[in-house]
Length: 147
Image 1 (cartoon, helix red, strand yellow):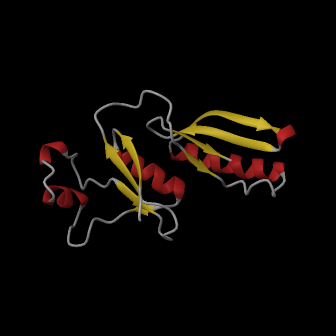
Image 2 (image 1 turned 120 degrees about the vertical axis):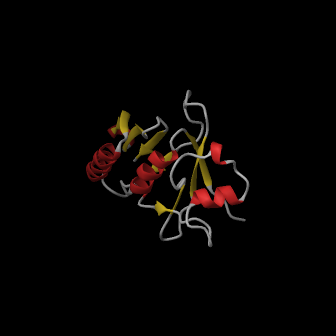
């Protein structure tokens, strides 16, 4: 079985750019024989009126093949409640890495993500439990964590 992660969104191209950079993924090429995703969508019967302008790039993939592909599915409604599923990025290295080093790694990644368009929502900083995590939102408000 194969699977992909699907994220509902308003502006797929915006999230493709953000998440490809955030995850160190790349835009997924269209199926073989099609110059763009738009051409492929039209070939499978999606009406042109339902497609955004441009090439309709709405998918990213792990260039190393280890992570799942992600499809940013355009939907008409804006995000309105907390995500029931979210992505956790773990640059800290886990509890085998000393907390001060993990905190520095997490903070450096958070700084990189903010430059890409993320917004910091808060942090969980509990030295007594040897834990540090920062909660962020992507450009459309989808929550994710960095630990």
